[in-house]
Every structure is written in structure tokens, then in C-alpha cells.
Amino acid sequence: MTTDQEWLNVESLDLEAQGVAHSSEGKVVFIEGALPGEQVQVNAGRRKKNWEQATMTAMRRESSQRVEPGCPHFGLHAGACGGCKMQHLHVAAQVAVKQRVLEDNLWHLGKVKAETLLRPIEGPAWGYRYRARMSVRHVQKKGTVLVGFHERKSRYVADMQSCAVLPKKVSDMLMPMRALVQSMDQIERLPQIELAMGDQVIALVLRHLEPLTDGDLAKLRAFAAEHGVQWWLQPKGPDTVHLLDEGGPELAYSLPEFGVVMPFKPTDFTQVNHSINQVLVGRALRLLDAQKDERVIDWFCGLGNFTLPIATQAREVLGIEGSEALVQRSRENAQRNGLSDRTSFVARNLFEMTPELLAADGQADKWLIDPPREGAFALVKALADIHQNPELAPGWQPPKRIVYVSCGPSTLARDAGLLVHQAGYRCVSAGAVNMFPHTAHVESMAVFERI
Image 1 (cartoon, rainbow, N blue to C red):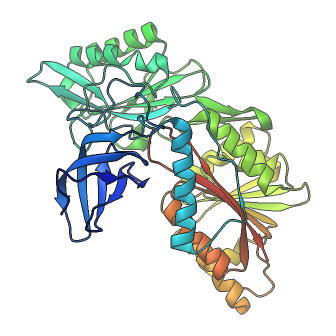
Image 2 (image 1 turned 90 degrees about the vertical axis):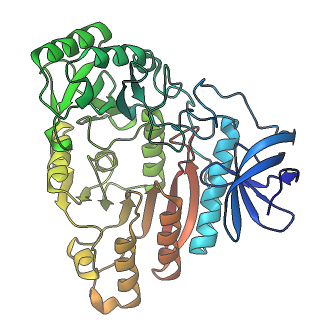
Image 3 (image 1 turned 180 degrees about the horizontal axis):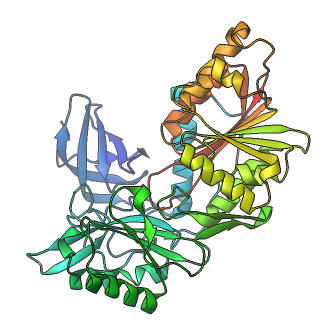
């Protein structure tokens, strides 16, 4: 058992941005707020047979990478905002940690080592978050309304007066938003405000559990006029979202390198960090290297974030997604950008893929895979099955190159293991993408080529 007097040497960070050390007994100790290279004393809380979770109580050697957090609401104390976990670590060191997490996952989970490490993709560390889901709570005991992220390891909403990772204009609206909700008739029935920013529009989605009164609607319109935002209302599920008032600029983001504009609804999935997304798409397409005579399949295509840029380079692109409604949105975006003649879209349950379904979508020279956090296990398993049993898809040829964009290093590593050890590919390169600075979230990209 770790004692209060024992000094621990912090060796690394885990995926939750906790320092990792070993006690004198060899037990692993996870330490809130500690950084690699530091020597600390701790107060152990949760204890298990092989590990302990602790908080730092004293430090006698500080990391050279420790910095002053950029937000007054960041911290380890009760009531601190839980939206960020790594503001006390220099942003360059954050990127290095995420690159190491990617490498460790690939090796320990997939037994894969990339032949080349890609330079991490990084960008602005502050004001980058163009998407956010903020909780709203009327705290009667305090006589106030809170709008923001949850407190660290708590269901309570943090008392945020500003947010350094939101764009300044949005951060400056947090207190006016609190005052707005506090003035509304339905103050107890407004659980959430979602932010979605486009190139020209700040959209705010108000989730309301009861119909809004005429007075509340008038207050929303006055707020929109004063702060230059666009209100959307969501009475039930995401499909019910609609504009409070029609007209005004279109909610969309652009990919200037490819001349593509992507309209979206504020509840659609889009990347939180527009500048990183532009770099990500550009690098993915350079690595894919689609030629004008090639056919490409974009698995988990979403609204066409990769599909449409690929269509500016390839002969044909097939975008595959799990929802027919989302596929229709992709078709509309392709038409909007004049790319309908080079694109087609189909709906598939990509978590129940089989060799037969895979072959039914036809051969492609190259693939781009951009799955959710669960990864693309069924897809790569079907590919591996065909490699080991060609009779499952007679005459079908696998793609010669796959670019895999991941939001979960563990599922990427699992799928990479299948591709390398069972499907006949080698991992030629991989690198981290710092889509979410100051958080422990790791995005990454890997390239596989057929042997």
C-alpha cells in the first residue's frame, strides 16, 4: 500500500491524463495532476489488488513541461470544469504523449509497428472548438442558471464564466446565455444548448422538453439579433431539429484545397476543429493518392467529408454509410458541389459486414475508412476472410492501399492487427492528429498497402 510519506517517480501518462508511477511494492499508482518526470507524494483513494488511484499532495521535482493552465476553470479541485484534462502540460508535450499512445496501442494490442511515423497534425490550441454540447441547469439554491460542461468526475454542471477552448465570441456569450435562460418561462425544461459553427454562422441548438411560450421565442430572437447567432430548436430527438426562423447564411464549412463546401445541420456529426479537419483531409488524400482512372470506396462516409474531395481526383467514388437518411444528405452535398457524376452512395450496416456483402459493392483500387470509435472490425474481418479463403469472393481483388482515419487508438490497433496479420497488408505509416488539444482524446491516421 502506498503511504503518504513515500515519494513516487512519475513515469508516463495514461489515456485519462493521469500520471503513472510504481510504489515501492511494485503496485501501479495512477495520480491525478502528476506529469512524467515529476517526483510526488500522494493520497491514495481507490485501491485494488494491482493498482491504486491517488491524488497528488506534494511535489519536490517538477516537470519542465508543466505550464500554467490557460483557463481559470481548469483544475483538480471540486467544482473544476471537466472539459479539459491536460492544460497543465505544454501542448507540444501533449502531442508527443498522443503519438506514444498510438504507437503503444498498435504494438501492444495489434502487434503492429508502422514502417514510418507521420509527423503529428496539430494546430491552434485555444479557441478551436467549433462544436460543443453544453448542459443547462437551474440551480435554485444558488439562484442562478449554469451553462457549460460537467464538473470533473461529476454529474454537476461547472460554474463556467468563460471557456478558453471555445471561440472567444462564444465564450463571451456564456454569461449572457445564462441570463437568457434564467429569464425564460421554461427555465426548468431546457436541459441543453449545443454549439455548431460554420464558416459564417454560429448555430445554437436549444433542447426544450416543453413547447416554448411566445415570450420565450421573442427572447431567443432578441438574443440572436444582439449576438449574431442562429437559433435552432430541438423538441425531441436529433431528427426534430429545425430553425427558429428561416433565412440568413447557410450553416456550412469549406475545404478550400478541393473547392468543396459542406452544408450541414447542427446536430450532424462534423469535426470539432475545422482547421485541423482541413489539414487532415488534405493529408489523407495525399496518402491515398487517388488517380483519375481509379475507383475508390469511402467507408463510413458521413456527409462526404472525404468522399467529395476524393471525387475531385478519382474516376469514381462510392460512399457507404449506415443510414439511408445520411446517404441522401451525402447525395445532396455531392450535387451541391457538382460531383454527382463521380459519386454514388449506398446504405449498409457496416457492423454486420460479410465477405459476400463486401464483394457485392465491387472492387476498388483504394479505400478510405473513417469509422466511429467502435472501429471497423466487421469490415476488415470480411477482408481478412476473403484473403484467407478466396473462394468466398471468386475473382474479387482487394484494394492495393487503405487509408484509415481513427478516433480510437485501441480499435485502430485491433483492426490494424487483422489487416497486417490476416489480410495481407503492411502498415507503411501512422501518426497522431491533435484534434482535441488539452484533452486525452487521440485521433490518428494509418496507411496500409497490400503485400
